[in-house]
Length: 512
Image (cartoon, rainbow, N blue to C red; front, side):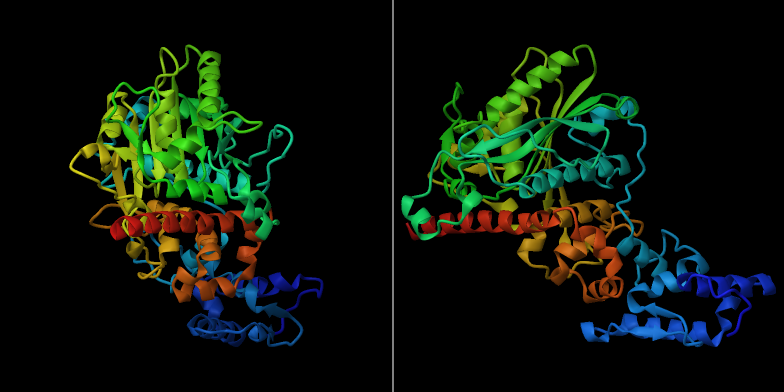
């Protein structure tokens, strides 16, 4: 189709210009601009492209337009056609379907979008768990959904902060490290370290001398951050202190997970209050050049409480997997570290059981609120399940209120997704963002981008969506920079650490 324009018009805008020019002449429905033979050809090619199931890299060729002078690469088809400008935006109430190209394009290409950031005001204590989140979970309150996802992203920042620089100095204290927080209204005030009380045998270093940070006893495990933005403080109704903890990463952290016997809590007057030995070890042990996790958290929380004396404060502890387990021990530690400790709440993702029934009663007595986000398909949330003898002091018990999601309810994930995907933190955030209620498990207007989920769990995402992502590689480009290889590796390391530990432990008990 010939048009009277200068040859300097950018190639990527030419087709858009043709479409708009045609619609300007007709002054009718925008769909009239699709009547040209060239545009119909591209729509046909696009339809064939989405229907294919296996496309090799050799198929990614340049397709010429009718005049043979302009080309649009396959990865830019949607950008060239600008179908989202022509077709009206899909309504939220419509059934989710790949045929809604504008929605699929948005989910696969845009940056993170969140549920509305409403003013919590005087209700902040309710969202922080003062009533155990009664009436907010089913259906899931949109404000609570956003808060849960936001705290989960703090844990993702802890994963990335560790894997971007996992090694610890041998002969000196570590330097302060930069952490890229998902919320700019918070600032990091303290780095946290966890140290194992056990060491690997010397023959391990002899046989595998290049393991490096995988065998170090002390490792960076998270951070303390505080909200420092006046507008955000006003919106939330208080100044929030966040403690974020990652999951298992090093060999010695895995080793601690094998130590699943229940032991007494140091300093407790009740001998029946017991927690998992390995978790307690990582919480209490000092390193050669770093304090214990317990000491660091208590000192920093005391400092912040004193600094912001007179203000409305809250303490929110969040973690995934091992971090979820340590969150309960941290909450127990700081709940009595000062005369007037602010309300303490725990948001945990995919956490194992930590202690016995007496430990649960101990947390309840201290008024520590715990919201456990649990994927029904996640193996880690079901362990350890050790029961020895007739005394309840030897039985593991979960603590807090449960928000249950299910991998099978996602329209994007395969119903038979592997156990690694079911424990993955990004999969958790995807499920929380989409969860509406037990009667309608996944909302049609979910906000969270699919890009990171596709990138980390490609084999567990339905083929139609992974294929669409391949047709637009530019959507994945932001994830290939900035050291995200470590963040991708973290969930797999974390999952296998727990799986091997718990399955080996329970198998040994059965053999006995």
